[in-house]
Image: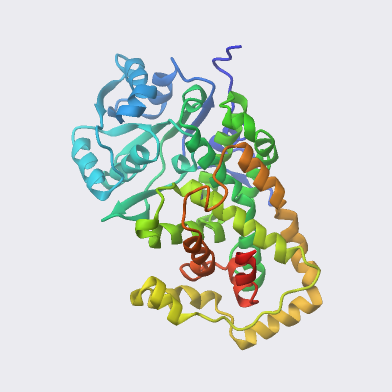
Length: 437
Ligand SMILES: [Zn+2]
């Protein structure tokens, strides 16, 4: 059955027009992106979508050889004649600062760009147009949360940095195109949003123990679709449109999460720290896995730790934090030690903090864990749905050296200032046991 104009936007329509009301604070919320469309197909409506946002502008449509074939040539064909557009096929796209500089030179004659593509094309255009004070919209070729964020992931001499950039004017998802993207990318996108559960538990725990910020708005939006998405994991892998729409919707909301909270904590806690550790220190051992794939594997580990510790009816006993300086220097190099000491400052438990926490736990443990358990997905649900979606689940699946992965679980907590279950497990002397189970 062809439903050319079936709209899968869900709650996004309310966010786009600023009319969504959060049930927790009764406030109205909007988003910084002017339009987002998730449709079965966008074939034939491209020029209307772009005209609404880019009237009277001279635009360059940029794709790479793959995305040009997948959608770029069609988009240019449908825009040409209706809008003032040229086309550029970026033969060797790169989301490095060199790639960004190249795009900036291309932007000279244009008011903005229309990106057709996945992370590389989209993020480098996001950053290049930001630096030039120009605008862009994007047609997505994969389901991914990067399209709806205001940050860009750009590498400098091989080191990836997440940089403040700006939001797209419009983000457009054509589900028929997405259903043809490599399965590995769909599975990675699934893994990068199912981490909602581990991130929320970590973030709420940090709020309760260290009094850091916490905001539920993005989670209220994600909760509308998360269980449906999980139940449709195998249909997502099979490329079924209705199921892909759920993954796309959740990915878009996850990306927008930062716009409500002003921090990335909402979807980036212990599991993301482990993935960053892999990217920072794997070197020659890096198996070439993507961000989403690594986050998925780490989510499974972190979920196991959270379930093991927070479902116990007895509280852990916290000891003052130990930074294993010798091991860190040996494994990560001398210069990392200073960075790590600084990162650990806000979450360092000294004798006094350990004692007061233990006292609090001994009186209020069940009260402490109850709201955390409410936010937790069962480990089996995560494991099984990721399997159904075709996602990598273990270091072995990823062909990642298992000793190196154990190091990522052990030392990942030291590289960021975010308090997570890895810190609680480490400070209560349970981490090594959990890693070696
Ligand atoms: Zn992520």
